[in-house]
Image (cartoon, rainbow, N blue to C red):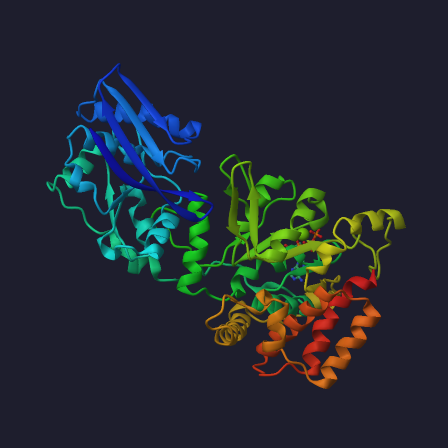
Length: 513
Ligand SMILES: Nc1ncnc2c1ncn2[C@@H]1O[C@H](COP(=O)(O)OP(=O)(O)OP(=O)(O)O)[C@@H](O)[C@H]1O
Ligand SMILES: [Mg+2]
């Protein structure tokens, strides 16, 4: 007998329809899976056979052929166990074949027939919802532990099963299963952690704080340069406390990437806060950019719509630093493999920190720098040129005076800074409504004319800076975007000369050394 079960595969965060066709025919007992299965899918044979037998079902001693269609798409992972088992049960008449209509099955099986969670179900559910062919009538059947995560996008019915027996009972109409939607309110309710470190603990460093405020408000990349122990790491760690909140759509977009990486917490799978990723400088390129045979998202993608913090920037390998250029420019990471190109969204805000030289004291008012000119050049060249060009704000974090430390004066609290950031981001949402742009930093060159017209005086100032600082076209555009954010922070409709002036000042920092 023949049966056909619908399932879904992922390439990156994109979903694809896959059909599991099962044929059971006479002949020597045999169990074959065809249709470009990766080794992990071939292993499904052993799991499915054991799961069916150990659940008390009959496993046919016949010739079983399972075809995963379309055959040209490589199938990877353990998510095909459940649809293959359902296909065999239907082909042998142990569940009614017509009960499979309008249902999509995904999930791993253990040898005793229990279902096991798989990564990526939120991305699968979002794909099924988007395509929306049969709306609410479409049911996604998956492991119970995945049900809440799959229900996040909404728009489709989700049914979680604990084991094969439950699946069969449900398909025979002997068991009703509940929609997990009930708990969603709890999950969707966003809240900020109160224990986050706060900007008010940072003494002095007003310029750096201002730079971080501008960066957070417009999603700009920022580089902090300064001698040891002046608070660079401390400042960067406080960025999450001033990042603007996300819309529900943005939360779902971020959650999708983390779902594919299998990183979502089970009880509260929606990411409510912008990601803040801080990979160590010993991280491999695969860890940063994503990799593996079935490429998983790397840090640049896990930081999507959030922050990628790279402390001790020049310590990262040359390959990592150069590799950053592509996602920084395109907002997505493309990982190319022999058969496929996998894309992960990677629109992040880069926050980097470094010392001015290997010993850390170049330009320090009281410390002697022990580095040779060549050493300094080598240190700086690691993160120079094209990469520096993509960093909008270069900010100095100088050594503090004793008075700054002693003064009981508290810095501004994160809550107050965040208020301004939220207002500025609100203006940006209004401005870019109906477009794919989410913040000033993601404008491209052609958007500048429409959204960022400059007055004559501002233009002149920019021209002078362009010539005297030897700026690139990219730097020119980035200055205008930063100026737009500075104007937004002031609630100004037009970009004015002081806004351009401040934005230029963040670019000229690097010339000093
Ligand atoms: N501006 C500051 N206000 C309050 N405390 C500070 C400040 N700067 C430094 N500190 C204190 O010094 C410690 C070290 O600072 P931090 O690790 O941020 O330095 P850094 O600039 O990252 O240095 P390095 O270049 O060596 O990485 C902090 O944990 C904090 O206790
Ligand atoms: Mg540090």
